[in-house]
Image (cartoon, rainbow, N blue to C red; front, side):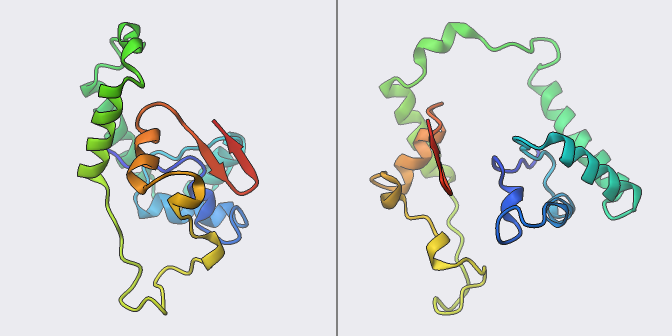
Length: 164
């Protein structure tokens, strides 16, 4: 397998979000992110990562490792032989069975990280106002929110932006 970032997730490594994209990319890639989801700023991403590699801040061996792992998965999945999706299964998307399977996958794979030993001294310096409660996002529970992400109904709720 390989490690892929969340959509604009790397932007949120530094605070305020996006305040230091150069440092965010350096930390993310050196920490093991193999594929960065780069929404609007691909040109900036390429320029920064290329600079980091040229300046030996990101070892070329790290890039080679990421490429090797991504290609291994793509070859295993047959994406070079059959790169297009199987549209015969489109009718299965968002069916009750599909949603049930997605929820089961979330229940079996969801990881809850503990933010330090003492709740009054969190390990990760997230301001209280930045923490997201699934109920405040309109979901009954965390499983429902994650099931939506796994059933091709992508709902993004972010700072000042909402779209489905």
